[in-house]
Image 1 (tube, each protein chain N blue to C red):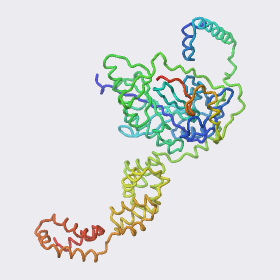
Image 2 (cartoon, rainbow over the protein chains, first blue to last red; image 1 turned 45 degrees about the horizontal axis):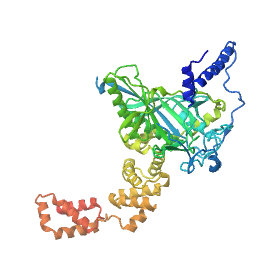
Image 3 (cartoon, rainbow over the protein chains, first blue to last red; image 1 turned 60 degrees about the vertical axis):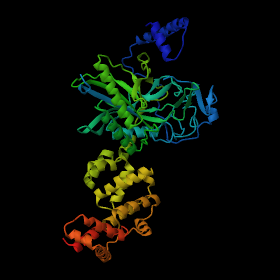
Image 4 (cartoon, rainbow over the protein chains, first blue to last red; image 1 turned 180 degrees about the vertical axis):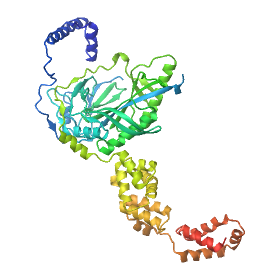
Length: 95
Length: 479
């Protein structure tokens, strides 16, 4: 299965990635190669195998509904490129 | 074709914040009103390498709600990732449930046009809330607060069974009342702890083919919800009548301009690329949890309403208002235990008590009037110890201070005089002072009667029992 350039641009748009023409072509090839590898797997007969969506399934882990001390706000904001007060500041979101 | 040739078709998606102490996948507090980003941790900040751990209480509340809505509770449900980019969603995806939600196929009974209607519930699922962004167009920035990121939500999706804006608002009210009854949500639309999106379409009457729908957002009050749907129906009818096509899109309701407008272009149509959440195994419910929630199910609003009608013989209108909030209903029953004229009690509740509560908003739980005191006050009015007007004054004072009715009556000298001889003496006096008026009455000028009542009441500073005054005056004046 070969991805079209259109599909590459669509996925890049969803991921908010700005790709140059050369990058579009490179990703088209790489992503197509991945999908082709999956196609190959599809040739196997998996009729009797149960689908696996999760690999770490030994019982379910719960939390009780207890609140604990959160991270100190300075630490929470440590990676913020910009902040105003204790809020993260980002370029204006256009709706 | 005109507007009346079209049938509106409406479905609602309601998001309800669950009243848990901690967030759905981490132990940060869900408390409202903290300064920005004070309730955050590596999990809800979406830092690399963290894992979500499910809050058990969220599942219990989802099951309780599902049972109350008559849903099938799925013993196995699956978490999914919904991918989109927005600064208030730090992970770049929302953990939600998609193709295998925890509850399916329920119904909610509402008072529709032409009687009770069962609105089908398609699904109820759990998910995490996003953070909050505040936009500052002047500085060209948006401020992001992640305190709300990871607060548990229940999304409740109806089938497109609603047929008018009024029905949609009624559905929303009924659902809100139910969630508040269950104790899973605080019912506060204004603060956004209960949010609503509407899917609206129109089709020619008699058609079986649904029209193209639009999704309306930002409907944060019953009035806005109803108004936005009305506007959207009118807009769609206009588009179709002029030969156009309704585009499937998301529209934002603008209350100030009184219009809905397109939010996102069709080209950017949702492509959330859902896939199973690898960090959380499928949720498998044990029977014990489901049984415990079935036992915890309280009497629901409609059942209580019916019981208020039969047990207390109240009209549907009274019963509905009294049972709209569980604490109010409980309080009514507590007072009714000591006072038997239920209709009269209902009148005092819906008139005086609600007026006092409106003037000074107070949660019922914090009400100072003891149920026994309330009952005693009404009994005093019935026995003629005080007038109904004085009773209202006493109730207002009890509302402020929590004093016993007898104390307030004594302190304010409100006791009504029913004593025959005391009133008779005054009646005689008034008649003696006004012989010509008495003559007029006897000559057939009946309007003068009111004058005499007024004179006697004035002489007794309004405290005479009016019934006794009337009887005595009639007797003395003759005819």
